[in-house]
Amino acid sequence: MGRTAPRMTLLYLLAGIFLTLAALWILIPALYGLPSVPTRHDRLRAALRLADLKAGEAFFDLGCGDGRTLVIAAREFGAFATGVEIGPVQCLVSVGNAIRNGVRSKVRVTRGNFYRADVRAADVVFVYATTRELSRLQTHLESQLRNGARVVTVGSNFPDWEPVKVDRENLIFLYVMPPYRRTVEPADGLK
Ligand SMILES: C[S@@+](CC[C@H](N)C(=O)[O-])C[C@H]1O[C@@H](n2cnc3c(N)ncnc32)[C@H](O)[C@@H]1O
Image (cartoon, rainbow, N blue to C red; front, side, top):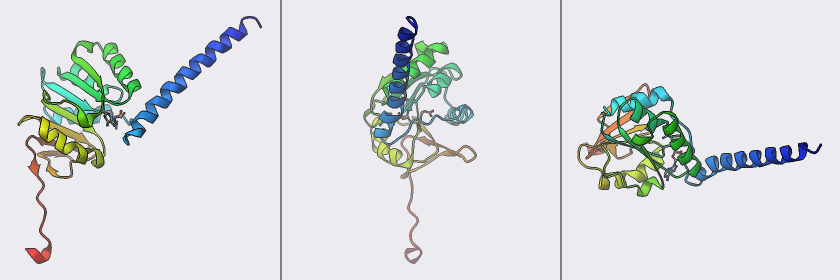
């Protein structure tokens, strides 16, 4: 009996910490309208191959989640990977993942809002988001990225940009800056 009470207290404390972290993991991204849904590893690799990510290049993941993209970019492609992430728990998990995979020196994680992120140094930017976030990101990326920088998206495409390559099987879109503008098809009566 004497030992059970401290054990139960510790158990409640650990459960409380776990539930708080789990709630933060879900609630903070939800406040920004984009949940923390990870990309499959094979789809990530396909995206980085489509972007032709090379060793030594600067790679950014806007909304890096658990940091899996950063680890693959650094470990398998030799890139210097930066994650911009709004969720504090996701940031901690990303750093932990980089340490666990031996690529901490090539991975940087910044807690912040990707609509205001400084991505001027990027060679390749990766985004897994919906068209709503991408349409808001367009102007920011156009104002920041140098000519020749690549942007790769999974799941959705930029509404006003024309991709230079599309992987239809994995729904991956590649853009090169400055982006081609999507041309609006004239209505039948105006042709
Ligand atoms: C769909 S998940 C993608 C995670 C990771 N990039 C992947 O592909 O596995 C989107 C991530 O973006 C983060 N996020 C949502 N809105 C954000 C914002 N405004 N600024 C920075 N990160 C944001 C979420 O917390 C979440 O981790």
